Every structure is written in C-alpha cells, then in structure tokens.
Length: 227
Image: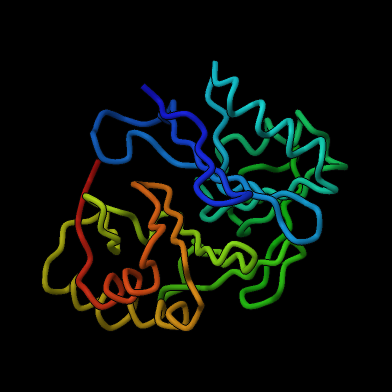
C-alpha cells in the first residue's frame, strides 16, 4: 500500500508511489516525490510523480498551485521527469516553471520548456544546484535554503535507514577507485552547507543528524544494488 502524503517538516511534504515503468525488484520499486512552499510565495515540486487514484497527492498540488505565485518543478536527473508534462498541462505553462539539465529538456520537448539551472547560481525559489562527478554527471543535486534540505536523484539513497552513495554497477577495485578518487571528492562542497534534511528519491529521507550522516556517507565506499 502506498503511503499517504506526509508533512515531514513545516511546509515540506513527501509521498511515495510505485513508478509504472519500474521492473520487478524490491529496491527502487517505490520512488519519493517532494513538495514545499518557498520564500517568494511560490511552491516547488521535486521529481514529482502523480500516481493514478491518489486524491491526496492531487489535493496537495491543487492547493499549492492555487495559493502560489508560481509552481516550480525541479528535475534532479533527466530520467526523473516523471509527471512533469502532466503537471504543466494541468496547471498551465504560464503558472509552471520547469528546471532541469539539458537532457531533461530534450525528454520534455517540445511540449514543455525547461530552464537550465547554472550550478552555484541562485534560483528564484531560494535554491542552488551543484555539479557532481568527474566526468560531470547529468544529476544536479538541489540545495533549498528555506528548508535546509539537500535533494538527490540517484547519487545518494538510503539503505536500511543509512545514507549511502549508490553504485548501480557491481563494485570491483577499479570502480571503487573511481568513486574514491573522482566522485566522492566532488560531493565535498555539499558538506559545507548547513544541512538539516537530506531528501532522496530511493529510501527514507534523513530528518535528524543529516549533516553528520551526509559526511559519513561521502567518506564511506558506495553501496551496490541493482533493483
């Protein structure tokens, strides 16, 4: 049974639902989406999925869209476009601004215009995204100052309540060296943020001790899991 929408902090909501395109496998079968009010009177959705028959999700989004000046949608990684097209159609392109990497823009073209956030630059809803990986990944983790929250697509997930770097490929010495020398160091600028919450697509969010948990996860080797 899919969990109801939960307000995990004032003005910050989470829901999880099974993605219709997911193949059999326990890990990742359900994915999380987030919604929040932001400082400029707008609202922000992160990787939103609108599952069929979920009146609680629709009601939350309708309320936010009605009260917000703008409904922002942020896509953390290109294949998390999920229900972005449906949201733009539901609330109108004049009310919805979509943000994502250029490959997300290609997935949604021509129906939806996607704005490309520059890593490090301030976004109108009080956020900043970060480039990670060497070579650079398509994923752009998002920092939301109002909620002291750091959002990841797939780079970090939680396994059994612990935040971990996720490797979708089996780990051998070469891959472990890649993460140690070329990936984990690119996450270190995130450790300087005053993080109180880490919001992940796969697994439960980290809502207490998040800064220490993030630091530990970046220092540890990745965890391999394939569905």
